[in-house]
Image (cartoon, rainbow, N blue to C red):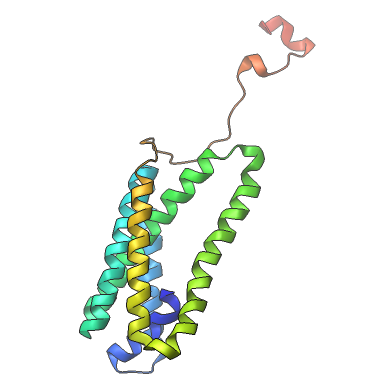
Length: 191
């Protein structure tokens, strides 16, 4: 939703029709998201998911305030905050999920995860496109911004149930020596 509405909002706030304004808006969200993942990779899944969802909610409310106040500075700063929150929340949720999936089902579940993730990105954008001619860009952004902030709070609440373990990497389980079959050459080594 942000990537579909924000470039037009930034054009209005900056009083320009330059594609660079839209590109700056997209970069203000996506670059901090990537940096947040690089910086936060040693944090626990719970910390990433909870702090990320709360940060994303605060950032979305800041985007709405920046738009309503006509302040490009607040709007762009809030986009950076939203990007940080998105990056952290996405990484925490993805790591938590991938660590909980049995290896035999990881491909199926991750495919479903990405299907849901893409639907969660695209369906609100389509809905915003439908609402836009009726509500206008500012009211559409207001409605969707508040909805995303509320959803972020709900995600943070749910993420508090994630265990405190830090899952920096998802390791493939190594079978115990007792589970490995012996071959005749290993008998001399106590197999």
